[in-house]
Length: 86
Image 1 (tube, one colour):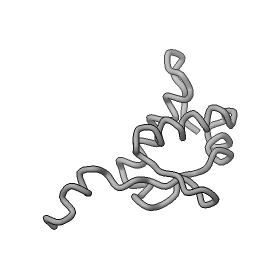
Image 2 (cartoon, rainbow, N blue to C red):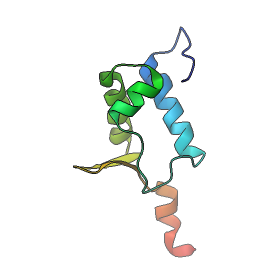
Image 3 (cartoon, rainbow, N blue to C red):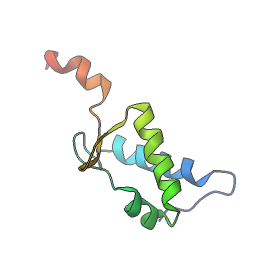
């Protein structure tokens, strides 16, 4: 569990942590991120808070959802643009 700063909203702190994990490769493109129940349990927050984090990531295009399967890390735009150069 992360320590929440008093001047930071919990959902923003969790969002920043998930983004850090994606950036550092802990969550790989095409692989799932934890779902709402697991995020809520890990960070000690309500499922609604976990849902907001996932919705923010979906809205920004950092993750995508497949109904009945889960939420997965999207391929970074940089990699898509350079895909044919490699």
